[in-house]
Amino acid sequence: MTFDDVIGQKEMCERLRTMVAEEHVPHALMLCGPAGCGKKALAIALACELIKHSSRQTAAEAPSMFGMFGDEPAAPQEPVVDANTLAMLAKLEHPDLHFTYPTIKLPSMGSEHQPVSSDFAREWHDLLMQQGPYFSPNQWMEAMGAANQQAIITGGESDELTRKLSLKSSQGGYKVSVIWLPERMNLTSANKLLKLLEEPPRQTVFIMVSEQPEQLLETIRSRTQRIDVRPISTEDIEQALTERRGIGSDDAHRIARLANGSWNAALEELSTDNESRQFLDMFIMLMRLAYLRNVRELKAWTETVSAFGREKQRRMLAYFMRQLRENFMYNFHQPELNYQTREEEEFSSKFARFINEANIIEINEQLEKAMVQIGQNANPKIVFFDLAMQTIVLLIKK
Image (cartoon, rainbow, N blue to C red; front, side, top):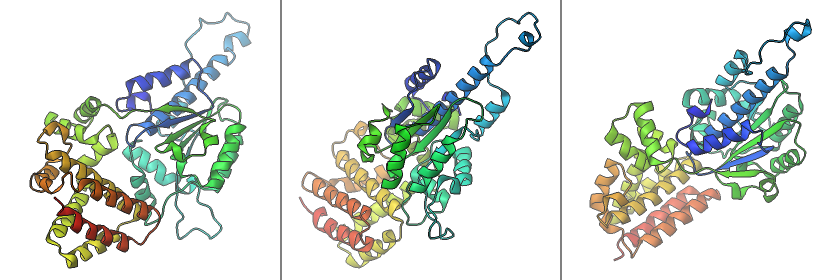
């Protein structure tokens, strides 16, 4: 993984390269930004660059064979990274590169066992090799075989990380710990990581990749150098879709606008089993049945969406909120204000007039309330049936 593999983010890549070249990398970095902007790709590229840089230093400091035998020293050469290091980094299997990520507890695990990253090392590596660094928490949950669990980073993970980083570097250079979604640490794990950050092992760099840094302990945030990563530009996504995926220019332009700075979202639009298409069907069904006041069918709709996992339910509600906004904006008849697929736009052409100034705020509030309640493990059948009943009332407001 190199900076050349990162989608867009040219300025950020150059900034990180310079930090490594000038040896100004702090012992703890935190890359923050919205989902799909390339934080994980940047973190892994930075980790690989750090290990390669320390490998070059080791080569430069090694004694010359000529000097050992009293011969004339050869002309100085630019130190290079040995092929073995490059091969291990290409497969992301270097012994000085450590990954930490949220995990779940499988039924096969003992009651006393705290899940750790090494329990899912094969699934993590396979996903990185197949998908690249651009994958979502949802895709990671699916790779682990999660059902309704919420993935966390346990205290056992921090203990294992402490043990790994206490070992001597395999090549005498940097040891790099990439921590994906540190906001998912439980309190025990967070306190143990804090101790690691306060007394870091020698030549160790921590690179955190966070989407919600405000959820981290203030003491952890204060001990890291925060770098905010912006969404990928629409032009860079469009170019990558054309050059890397062979997408036609018209489709690439529409997808790039829909992606809203997220390469993950762009890839999702290309997927044949696109989750958004399922969510659109659920949105259309809810709105049509609410307009018809068909309580019996709305109860069946509630049963269907209640069977989704909680993470999927939260993603569906977020999608509903986006569609609410798009339908409201559709009424202004300014195409540049809308970010929709052809299927979404076709539905909006008939439905948008029912979303107006009289009801958009209240419907959105109901969706936000449902999002909070699902996050608090409320009964989804009650949450979604209440949402459906409220939608009946609000949809006819003028």
